[in-house]
Length: 240
Ligand code: ADP
Ligand code: MG
Image (cartoon, rainbow, N blue to C red):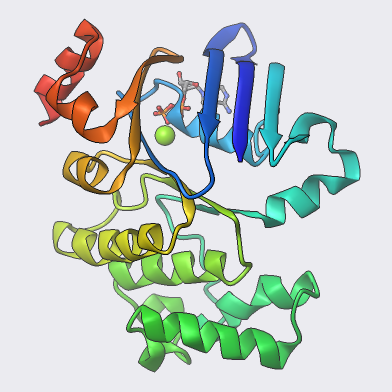
């Protein structure tokens, strides 16, 4: 579903992604870990073309997104992304936040979008928050709404960039649980995270990045219990 070939990214003369090669199957959950500044965010931002690769190819369902031209918007609609900070629209209610994009892109009528949004809110136990403004929500609730908003577009791939890093510790669990449930539905997911227990439990495959490179990639249990590269071992010894 995702294939990355010899991807390089420079910011001016700074080489931040170094010849990345990666394949992700449909339904796979990939954990992306590594020290701050190693290129994790840049990598997943390249996948929905929020960053333009300097060289290399990124195929989504066989289509090279760099050459997709006008189709880039269509490809982007298939890829949901959730960030550390929620980016909810403060002057719109929860329901309005969720239906905005599906209606704007004319994928759904307002009624259809609302019906779908309410179902999503129900699965996340947030139905009773549908008419409130984001300000009155906790961080964990906001992040779950941000995930619901993304899912309302029916993405085929979900990218998560440290979505629990800005949350108070007691709210991390409720967001991870939503992601766990989503993984069980067969969603293809790339999850940048510092939550090692989550990565170990939920990811099929874990990638360790350092200094712009994929240092090690393995089955999640293998990578955590039997890391092969000294840099992976050093990183894990600090965070576990
Ligand atoms: P991570 O998500 O692993 O912390 P990033 O992908 O955010 O790493 O950053 C990788 C490197 O690229 C860092 O050195 C960072 O400072 C640099 N970088 C990221 N975005 C930009 C940008 N827009 N302009 C210049 N440098 C950037
Ligand atoms: Mg980052």
